[in-house]
Image 1 (cartoon, rainbow, N blue to C red):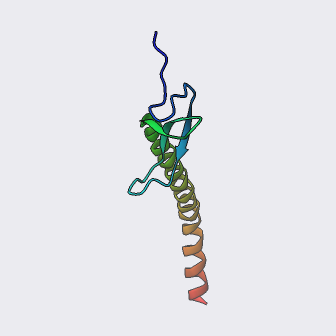
Image 2 (cartoon, rainbow, N blue to C red; image 1 turned 45 degrees about the vertical axis):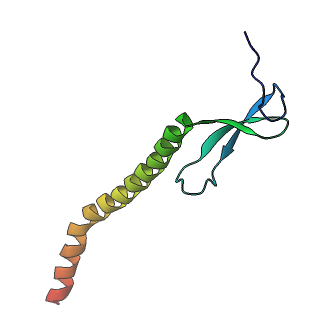
Length: 90
């Protein structure tokens, strides 16, 4: 089997580099680059779906906290209304 080599420096050593500052992109990309000179030889996109899912998970967790707070306040509401009407009769 042939050995993959960098088209720039002929090195056969590669690494993955995650870049989150790609202009025009809302999510990070994983670049396959030469370990010697840094030339990019490919880009992986499957990490993007993982990143998007983690962002959605965070948003869902925030929504769960908010709805929990709303639920606890709704449970308190009848007592507050009752107290309001008691105090308004005085």
